[in-house]
Length: 101
Image (cartoon, rainbow, N blue to C red; front, side, top):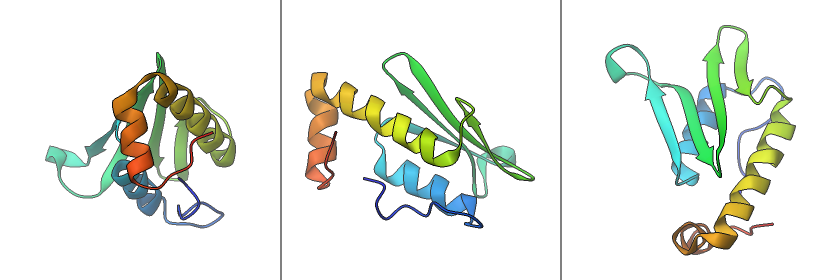
């Protein structure tokens, strides 16, 4: 799912947040002041666990607080587990051509 995601050193974090909102169905986005402007925070609730990526001056603040690659890996694992028991979620991923774990 994230094979084309803009992940890496020096990447524009707004592109990653936009990508997540477009490709992860349960993702909720928050925008800047008065809900306008670029996405400033993404929150994803998966099987009782909250994943959050928030734009800060020095980059992204992630919850759980791990490196970005580990955060994405943990998110994918949780989404795959959730899709196994949720036919609508599984269908939305498979329809997009994503391979779940």
